[in-house]
Amino acid sequence: MVNNPEKFIDEYIPLKPRILSFQFEPVKGDNKRIFNMINDLKENGVRVGIAINPGTEIDEIKEFLPYIHMVLVMTVWAGLGGQELIPKTVDKVRSLKKYLDENDLDLDIEVDGGINEKTAKDVIEAGANILVSGSYILNSDDPKIAINRLKDSL
Image (cartoon, rainbow, N blue to C red; front, top):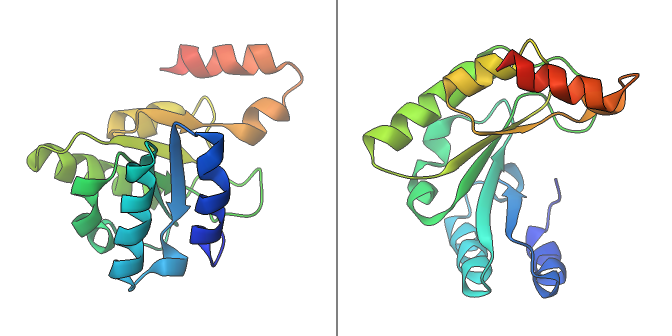
């Protein structure tokens, strides 16, 4: 999460990323700035994601959804690994998925934070199709076993 995502977009575009997500909250309310970033990424062949914190409602990003490829729903507050998933964020994923389906929008829904063998199934059932599970895997005694537990929980 940075206050000036355009600077980093300009630095990352030459690396030819497949997708780049920017955090919504630092640019919230500046729709021209948001659309400029979306267009800049797309014009450079980069798929666009918008990341939202637990306190941001889906309604706040709806106008951008037809123009992007992914929403990253942070299921914890960014900045500290190993946090537990905030339960209300599962409802946010469900609400986003319902809105996408009702409006015939084909976007990925990524979740990040507190993903383990207990929470993975919940967020997938809610509509997520990309899971980030950092601390659960990296802090395990055997990352391969942790990954297999995640897969088995689905």
